[in-house]
Amino acid sequence: MESPPTSLPASHDRSEEQSVDPDQLLSLLGDEYTRAILDALGTESLPAREIATRAGVSRPTVYRRLDRLEAAGVVEPTMTIDPDGHHRQAFRLTIDGFDLTLGDQRDAPTESTDATGSSAETITLSVRSNST
Image (spheres, rainbow, N blue to C red):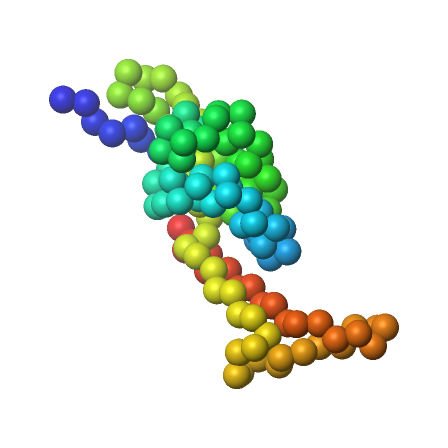
């Protein structure tokens, strides 16, 4: 009977971890492949090959999106050990979720004015981080 892969700590110190960039996250969420990858990851730590299979996306596309998600602080690489002893890189989400508030919400201001006097809708993004 094979046991599931064991996760090793990430190669970098989490105390040096960057926070999630809300603007970058919003931009990434506009991409259908990124959304499929995030959906495939869920709460698991998975290798890129498995993410590609679950998301129905090519591995090169998965790696490009994972690089962008890592730069934004949304995913982090981990190392797993297979039952046969092989070490493999996997990826896991660093956030539990996020809340998006558009300017037409009652508690939020509906418009803001920039330096030119133009008004713009307010968009607020708050990220819920994993505690582990």
